[in-house]
Image (cartoon, rainbow, N blue to C red; front, side, top):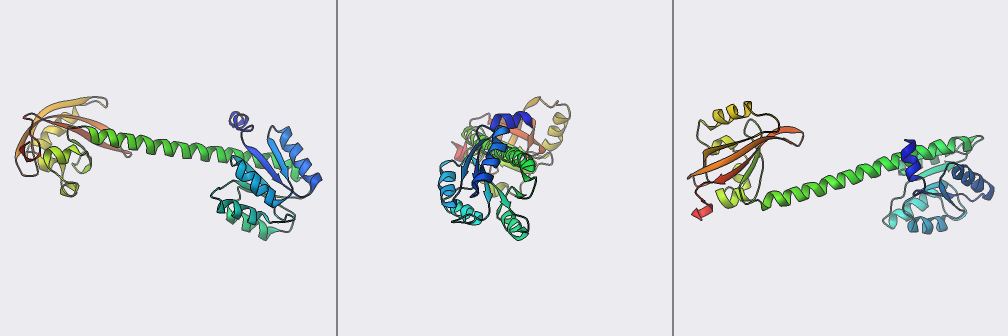
Length: 265
């Protein structure tokens, strides 16, 4: 955690929104001593403008300011299509304000009572670490979506039919070549087992092959597949076990041996 904090302290600015000049200076000094980059602002309107110009920041806000409340600041920022994390500060006895701001999305709160400056660094540290983890998760999810999109593009560019199916034969995914070569539409395969488009003895034969396979091995075999018209298509198939959506599945690439395509092309 310390290594992560050391890396991001200089990139996450803490915008201190506090109208009491002395308190603002004490908060800034406390956080600066911890290695944070700070900016003290006394008015809500100025805080909105500065936050929108520095979206990679954290707002540390007093609730009541001369011109706005912290709630109005957050709502104004969100009206400008930004969502900046914030910590709320309030004097003792403002429990309703704290509850209201936590519901609005505050990452933490601090009651401005004696000794609150001692609690401030740990509060900011927790929030910074939480935001960092959320950012990493978002980047990971985005990367996975991009990877999946690239996979789908490559998957559908392959000219040989590809089936992904469970060990029981339920078809999970096919590429575009299944339609182009064999004539099957997605709706044709919704309630069809992969074994249904093969001769009767195929399932037993494939199961015997799979029993002999190691995790990183593939099998190559010749078989007959029935196209959508019921015609026999001699094929060479390459199959292997894969992880698909957290389950074990079989991926099979099919190459027609007679060059037959849909409509006999």
